[in-house]
Length: 177
Image (cartoon, rainbow, N blue to C red; front, side, top):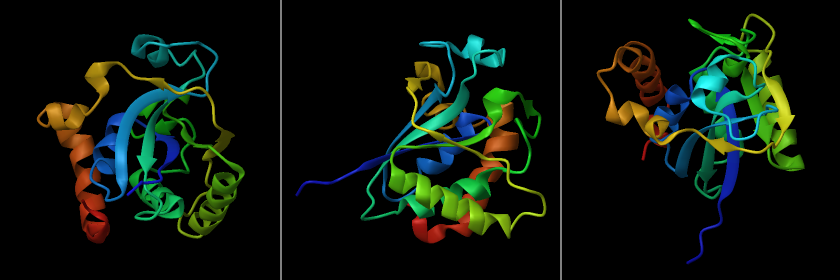
């Protein structure tokens, strides 16, 4: 049987957080930390950290829409970060941490606009999530891939990422692999 998959590219703060959660989502077949949306080809993490490349930290997701819809992936996305803070998530500050959805098709753009409108009623402040067309996706360095699973006791993973993963598990138990 042939499995038809789609791609989603989203960012909202440190990519380790999103990668750790989406790795547990039923229907997500691949998660890759990376960079997109900027002007520097093949950027390094060190370049991204300067905030001068224009790229954001993102995750590229391959998913099976027969198991999880793009709408539902974005709903999870909006529970993982604060889409009302411009260019920051907690102590992570800079354009590289912006809230962004890079849609891959007109249909994804339409769904993203719908979800943003739905989420506007959930948040007290205006949503500042950037909606942008697909751009070249540059995979992050190997050491960033599956980072949290490899370093669960590292300070950021334990204090920032782990609570987000637990929140996801509590809210979306039916979506777990």
